[in-house]
Length: 155
Image (tube, rainbow, N blue to C red; front, top):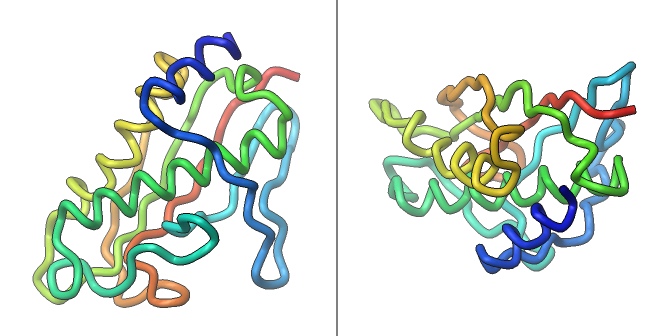
């Protein structure tokens, strides 16, 4: 299965980055039993925050959807750091998507589709998940999007 995941990543032109270190007093992931809890990931690209501001004011839906894709790539990078091999993912249980939203912006679900689609495209059936897509007044470092994840893993 790892070859399939790697080939899907390659076909999508995705090279997983080095997993980001925590920026405060928390850990990037916790494994409890057969569950992997991944801390919130920001839209980091090449070591910098790629998409900032309020969606619906500073960032359009397409740009925010790209931010969600970057968050998903960083989720996969953290999962690989935690597990050593993405083929240990049995199922993505849930993604929680947070969108820094301008007043009146109501398309958070479209933004988080960027992450949902990427995860499903990379992991196949194991990537189909429940999720939440919520608007926030602000996110850390002025990020436009933050996403965390819960995954079932093979022990």
